Each structure stands twice: as structure tokens, then as C-alpha cells.
Amino acid sequence: MQAIPLGAKGSFTLVVAPEHLANRFKDAMLPPVLATPIMVLVMENAALNAVRGYLEPGESALGTVVDVRHLAATPVGQRVTAEAEVVEVDGRRIAFAVTARDEVEEIGRGTHERMVVDLRRLSQRLAIKSGRPATR
Image (tube, rainbow, N blue to C red; front, side, top):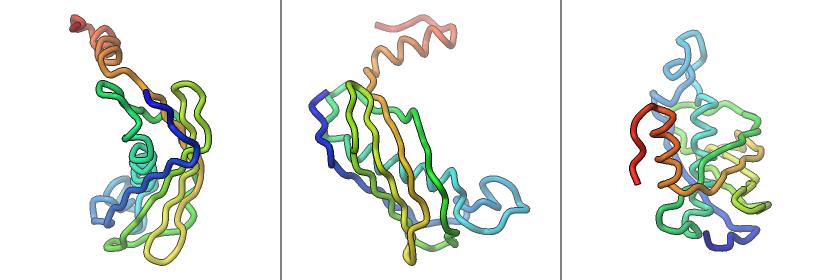
């Protein structure tokens, strides 16, 4: 892994579609607004985009902590953009400040952490966990 600088930033944008709404994604009794797990997905993608260029081939950065507030509802058709900024790096652990906005206002804010992993080692661990022979 290359050194990841504090202040590295990434973003990710999603246009809210019907399958992203709480009443379709979670439960029909909910209103037709962006589901919180989808907002978190947009924030996580922004964080990954902030560090993607610092990862070596064979590495990735998996989400390990999410602590966010969903502050405002967003209807179908609105563009949601999340931004992430690296605020701490401790070995393989990366902490981010994350925000999300729709076309009108901020809809979410919080923190997120990712851990840099070696994909080959992870594949071996998953193979053992699933009872399959590990590949080298």
C-alpha cells in the first residue's frame, strides 16, 4: 500500500431510482424516499474512490465501520452525491469523514472506516471459512 495522505478526497454520485426507495428496498409501508442503506452505499463508494489510487494491485479496502445520520428524505429522480475525506490513517485502517447531498440539501453525515486487505489472503480465508480448499 502506498502512503495515503490525510485530506485525500473521493466522491460518488447516484440518481435515485425506484429500486433505491425505502418502500421498495425494505418495506412497502415506508414512504417513497431514498433508503438509508443506499445512502450508506453511496458514502462507502465515495470513501473507496478516495483511496483507490493508493492501493497496490491485489489490494482492496473493505468497509469495517459506519456511523452516519440520515438527515433528510430524498425522492426518486434526485441526484445524490457523497463525498469522503481521509481524516486518519493508522496502518491498514483508514478513517473518513463522509457527507451526502441531494440536489437541495445535505441528507447525511458521519464517519466511516475501511481496512486495506490483501485479496489473495482474503480469498484463502474465505475458502477455509466456506469449507472449500484454499487456492494459492
